Every structure is written in structure tokens, then in C-alpha cells.
Length: 281
Image 1 (cartoon, rainbow, N blue to C red):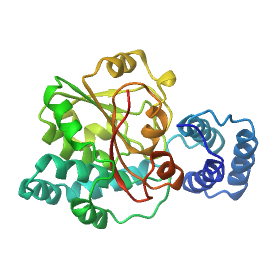
Image 2: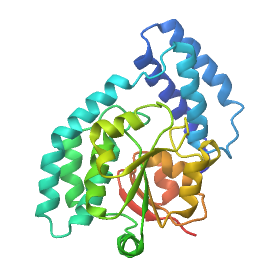
Image 3: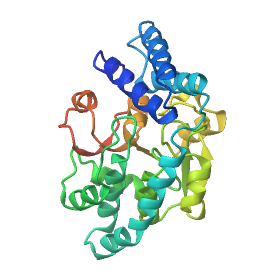
């Protein structure tokens, strides 16, 4: 997905939000905003938003000296999500379609997104997701491809959300390779986060190698790229991965909660839609 003009003020808002989490020094935050503002004027609109996000969050770490400003927040998100895990398991077990319910819960977890906002009610999202209809519901395709797949490449997004991914991985009932970020960026899931959640007991956990808040293939390591190109089935979670991979010419199942009007327009849905969308080939 390309960068739209509406993305530019959002980049500055993200910079301010992350800057205030990284430091309480107003002068440093002002310098950060100045530097990012100057950087944005040279950003081509052909770039995907995660490419710009990568530069912004590298700048945040460089100027504030804080390499992982969201570390504490990620731990809080993971702990909260793990406390909800038993109840989510019950919802899946009681449902008529366990796989569909697990997909909806995995998408509900996508609301934990500090790149877009800091305000969310995860219990409310869970309750709504179970009864909400999927938009662009390529569920039958999903089941068909899953049935034939020997191994699934599952690209994670946010750290707290990975607990919700765990619910879905359990229902896939196929070997899974779970992909995490190469470096801490926003509150995205890293190898350490995935292990703390116990995903390593259900799937093989690998790093894509990218420092971007989304999957940008040219910044990923060769091992991930090889798996991405050869996987029987690819599941991509969240807006950042959609932004980075929606232009790729291979079948990918995107699971996300739409939180941004730009992405809503790009997909052709309303903001707040829960989406299971298969990418075209």
C-alpha cells in the first residue's frame, strides 16, 4: 500500500505519542518533531507507511536514547491478554464454529495498537467480535487453503495481540511458523515476547529480521523471504503488515481490525470493520 497525504499528519502524531512515552524532556521531543517533520518532506508517496515508520522509530530511539520505549507497555498488554486467555478458550470451545470464533478473537486482539491510538477496551472488543460479521469474508477460501496446507506462515503484529494469535494457532491444527519483528518497534511482538506467551510451544518462532512496524520484504532476512515465497498458506495480522504486503502478488490472508480511514478506503470497508481478506494473485 502506498503512502497517502493523510498519512503525513498521522506520522507526526505517532512521533509525538512515542516521544512522550520515551522521554518527558520537552526539548528532546521538540527536536524529534522537528527532525521527523524535515524527514517527511523527502518521503516519496510510493513508499509504504511501514517504511516511513521504520525511519521514524529509528529516529525516536536515536534522539531519546531509548531503544525500547514500549517495553513496559508491552508487558502490561501481554499480562492483560493472558488473564483473558481462559475466557477466550471457553468462548471458542462453546462456539458452533470454533475456527471462525478463533479468527474473530485473533482480529479482536488487533485493537492493541499504539501506532494508531492508546485508547482501547479489549474486553469490549472481544464481546463485540464474537457477534460481529466479518467484512470481505473470504472464510470459505481460508478453510479450503488451510485444509490443503502442510505448513502455515503466520506473521504476527502486536505483542499483546500474540496471545489472541495463540488461540487461533491452536485451532489451525497444522504446523505453524510464527513470525516476529527483528527489533523492538512500537509494541510489536519480538521473539522474547512470543516465548513469554508460550507460542514457542505451539509453533516454530522466527524473526523476519525487519526493524519496520510492518513486513517490508526488502528489509527482511533471507530465511524469512524463502519461507514467505514457499509457504502453503500465509496469514498476515494487522494494519502494518497489510500496508507492507498488500501489493505482493501471492495469496495472503489478511486479518485485521480497521482503525484508520486511509486503510478503510484502500480496502473498501468502513472504519472499525473486522476483516478477513484474501489478497489477489
